[in-house]
Image (cartoon, rainbow, N blue to C red; front, side):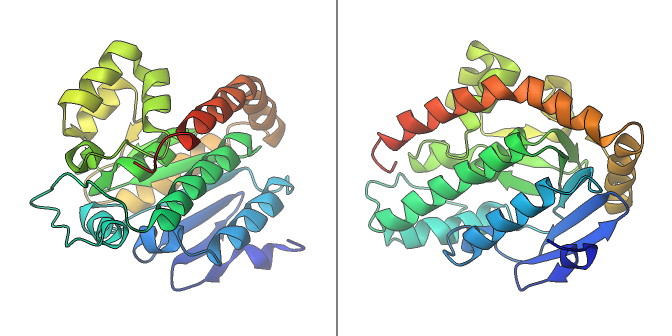
Length: 260
C-alpha cells in the first residue's frame, strides 16, 4: 500500500473504510464463500502485510452486522462439502466429505488468517452480532479485543455435524478457559450467549442494543487513542511470540487429521 486511499475500497464481499488510525472492515455477504475463494485469499494476505507495515494505522476492526458468520452460510458450505442437503435446523452427522480440497482450503485459510492476526503489529478488534458459528468464532478468539452486540450467540455447532471445530476453537478456548471448562463447552454445550461470554472473558465489551456499530467504533478508537503505535506493537510481540509457535504446532496436528 502506497497511500491511505488504498485502505478504502468496496468489493462484493467486503467494505473497507478509514477512521483516523482505525481501518473498519465490514463483511457484505456469505463469509464462507469468500473464505474458500482461492482468488481472494492471496489478495487479503497481501493487503494485511501492507497494513502491518504502516505505522499510521494502529488498529483494524472487523465489524459484522449481518448473519454472514451464522448457521445458514455454514449449512450451505457444509452442503457443498458433503454433497448432502444440510438443514441448519435439523443437523445431521456428516459421514463423508466429498470435496476434500475445499475443506482443506477452508481450514488452511482460517489458520492463515489467525497467524496474520497474531503477528499483526496493530490491535485487531472484532465486533460480532447475531449468531457466530465455530469456525469464525475461532478467528474471533485470535483477535486482540472482542466486542459483542447483546444479541450475540456463539453456536458451537461443529459437534452437531460430527466435525472438529476448525478455526483454532479448541486451542484458543483452552488458553482462555483452561482444559476442564473448554471440554465442558465443546463436548456438552451448544451455545454461549453474550453476557456469559463476557463473564468468561471470551468477550471484552458489550455494546448498547441500539447503537452497536457506533459503540464498537467508539470503543476501538478510545483504546487506540490511549497510547502509541509502539506500545501495541511491542506488547503484542511479547505476548504472542510463544503463542504463534504453539499455534503452529496445533496446525501441524490438525493437518495430520482426516479432513473432519
